Image 1 (cartoon, helix red, strand yellow):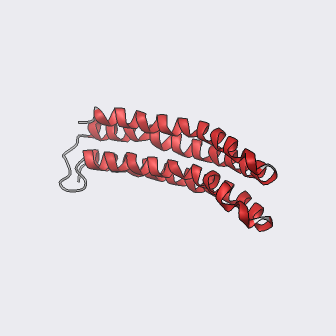
Image 2 (cartoon, rainbow, N blue to C red):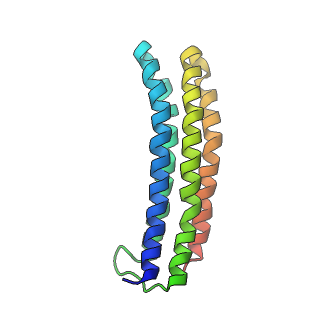
Image 3 (cartoon, rainbow, N blue to C red):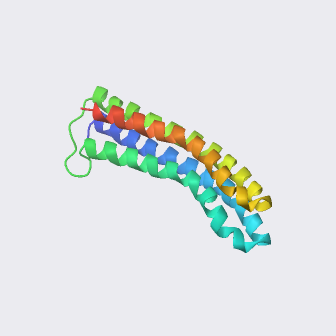
Length: 155
C-alpha cells in the first residue's frame, strides 16, 4: 500500500475521530446537566432529550465525511493507486469536517447544557434553547459541506 493511500486513510480517520470525540464531549456536557435535572424531575426527559442529543450530530458528519473519502479512494473494494500528492488532497479534504466537528460539538454541548438548566426552571422555553444549539450546528454543517465540495474534486 502506497503513501498516498495511507494519507487518504489518515484523513478519513481524522474526520471520523474528531467528529466523534467532539460529539462525545458535547453530549457528555449536556447529559451531565440533564441527569441532574432528571434526578429532581424525571418527567422532563422528553423536553431535555433533544438538547442532549444535538451535539451528537457532528459524530455523524465526521463519519459521513470519512465514508465519502474511503469510497472515493476505493478502500472498500480495490484501493486506487494514489500518489503522495493525491493522498495529501484526501487528507486536506478531511480537515473541515473534522475540525469544525470537534470545535462545534464541544461548544454546542455547552450551549445545550445551559439550555437544560433553563429548561429545568422554565420548561416552556426549552425549544428556545434548542434554537441556540442549532445555531452552533450551522458551522458543523458548513464543515461537512466544505469537505463534500473538496471531495468532488478528488482524483
